[in-house]
Length: 192
Figure 1 (tube, one colour):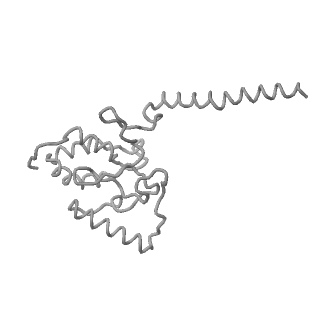
Figure 2 (figure 1 turned 60 degrees about the vertical axis):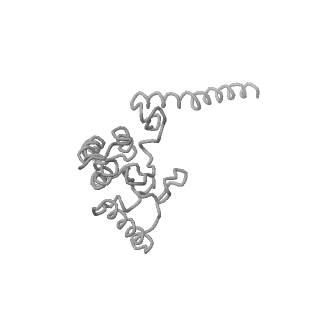
Figure 3 (figure 1 turned 45 degrees about the horizontal axis):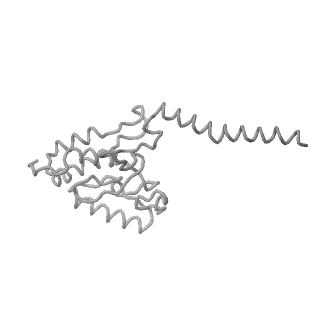
């Protein structure tokens, strides 16, 4: 009997080390080689501090920042999910109408769909290019920048569809707001 236990324990120990330590380290190393930033969570850094991930949306409010998509879970990653309200839900219709009116008042533009509906995860970090352009005048005015400066930041922040085929052009809100902070922390008021 002991002749069977010893090889079984040895095999268990070897497999534990290989699958519990070796494989995860090898995959992390390979991921880091292929996509260094993505392997670590696509973290965004400002002033030497990690301020968030390019993959997880954050809440921004006030006229000085671009606003993300609405979140059904208040950007709580632990509670990620949608509202689960269907298109015939009176609650959803009322929420969308309220968001549409607030968007129009803040940006003096019609709201694109991503400005009034939350994503399936509730953590979508991106907005449409149209949504970003609609918010540009508000942000430029609040920051005392020319709209052309803000438009340039938007143009530099556009992520194109994968291989030009998959998905749509989009703008990462956190990355755009960080770029905006680099350009104008407290810019003097200028005319557009």
